[in-house]
Length: 385
Image (tube, rainbow, N blue to C red; front, top):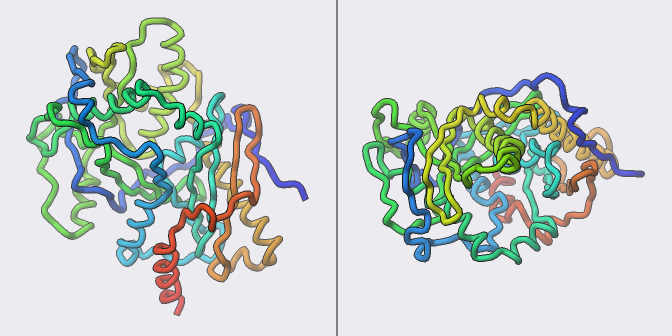
């Protein structure tokens, strides 16, 4: 029997925007790394992104984050979150990172980068994790010092703009620790799909009105209440736009990705530092996220992006249902708690439909670690008693 496939052409998804609920903060990761943006203006500046670059602490080039931090969060807060155990595939939650959702949403307009995504059904939930394509592996191996420098420039710009306290000043003289991350965990609904996802956040705005620092509390709900009442800002860097082709590429590619990233977490403002080729930021410019589709001059459409994301999640459930029926029988579509771990591999290359296969072995490349499976299974069994 031939495997189903999902067509990607943008014309298929040009319809009204799907129902998308406001993302709700349900947790945080790395709260000790939270940052604040005190001064947010459009102005001329002189930020040298090379300052102490040779002393920066960088992430290992072969780092494979998988879903590790999100899984740790789910285990640590399993009692507080108290997610109901789902037996029906229609009610299954998706767990993933924002980067994966952005990648999927942008697919109808992507003409260069293929992707691979593993979907794992376990105890009534679907875990989504991106895996490296051969092309991405090759790019990592061929990364030059200049490529690494470009990445570090982004972190250094954040250091120029962010401080550790609401009333503090940024300190760009310190070497950057690029391993420090602060993330929020959100829950949202996209049409009928329930999604729980983690997203790295840059900083809290405190430029309009004075705000208090993070409460000294061990109570997650107190911290979440504080975070939910704040506005976050997204920081970006970009080379100066001097030629028409640069302007078109900025509007076709950058604005689309920036919009998806920010819209998914409810951010309404992006601050971009425009730099020269030597890594000197010379101008700060603000963008309203809601304006990005308009200034892109119809080179991409938010409706297409989110309709494809919605359709892809439906496609995942349809492919999982098909596999359940083939291996265990149709009745197990509504008996998910009785099924063992199942996985499917979804692959897409520009100009082709999305293909699905069983060409992924979880034992060879485990995404859900044993420490998660063992503890989560105990929790599930206890709830079922």
